[in-house]
Image 1 (cartoon, rainbow, N blue to C red):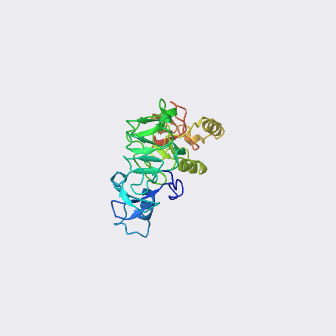
Image 2 (image 1 turned 90 degrees about the vertical axis):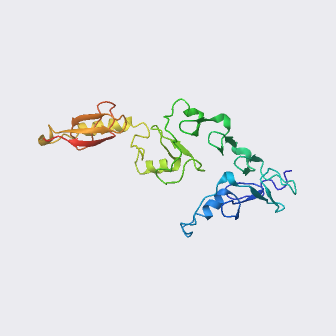
Image 3 (image 1 turned 135 degrees about the vertical axis):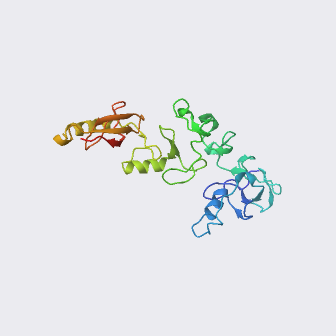
Length: 258
């Protein structure tokens, strides 16, 4: 029965029920509402916690207020508590335009349509089909915090970007980095996009900036952040170019005496 469909819920989900948190026994609209309320700065750090989503056993119908075991339709009034329902995640949502599906590899529900994603068993997460043949596998690639905002990525509600190096980051955080002219991975320092046009401009700048005679024979060892090569190159005040891949995304390791 679709009585009240889409009329109840919170800022996170439209649904016909509330949940009783198994951790603290309190009632919330959804797990995100619980986690936000229980992790506020004014909450004692010893009392902060997140809800174990798979341990939710009781829900309260928003239409008749009957508390009951987790199920899609209310045992008292018959109202649907979620047009999409997952009995594994104990998850309800009336907005099926998200194309929700349960990923057995991830162990949680995701959005976007099962046909548009694949589960990588090395990275242990779901990626767009467009990355199936091109992404670099890293063990548990999304099972960590965003390197910029430090929010846990695996079950984040925000869009996530997979970098060429295989590391993951919130798309908003990546865009914020570009605003501040930061184009290297915060974890491994590899370039996050095609920088060839920038390298060409640096070629011109290096050529237009001759070094004083005293530095003509000075050599330095560099490590390329993009290809990992170690090279002995001529010192320059502007930048040092990797002779293996032509990248200027390098760092000086040590210098030789003049």
